[in-house]
Image (cartoon, rainbow, N blue to C red; front, side, top):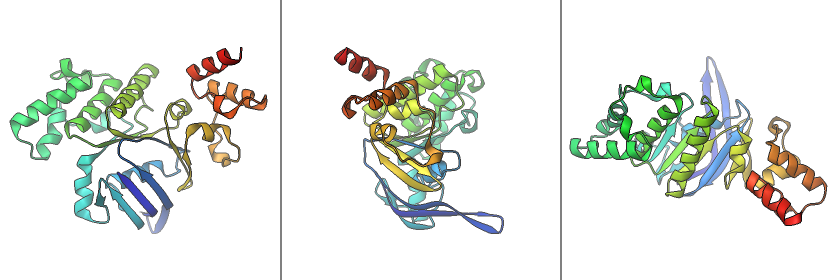
Length: 274
């Protein structure tokens, strides 16, 4: 799905050229769930924008959905297969109603009108917005607007959806709903790249990649990430409560495979040794 080798990216800032990505190696296969994290300014958003053709790599190789993204034609084509859901719900809405908003992207792709109608309504139903197809977008909550953005991706039959801190501006309830829905999409076969700084979301996944100062410094399972030592100082986050308890268990000699990532795992471990 995504294959990057020695990927670099430099951007112009006035008269200066700033290197924002350095020697990135990462492979994301179809059907994977990958969480991407790092401090502000670490290069997360720049990296994912190269994946769907919004930014042009300065060096190295990058293929996405089988397309070599050094080609401008391929960078345009990949935007249908790999879709982005951004931070701000308001910034990605074009239509005045959900139905209009979803149809806009299909119309731009030249989809026939009958097919466009069917795909629009199907995508809205899948995201729980079927009953709000004709409601003004301004009446939707932040969580509903993010589901609308996801509906636009589904209508275009995206193979991969990149959520670029898509829950950071939402209330806690909406945040959990969008995260849970993205996990459901993954279980249905959509490749998901979830960009976040929320540790509890990293712990819920299968694979975590960590950026620091434009470099990929970790790519592996979350259990190893949370319970190993030697992480760069910039990546020393405040642990979720479950991980904090897990560190105390680790200090007291608990087996590595029993160190918990979730509340359910903590409960199971305590029951097993109580």
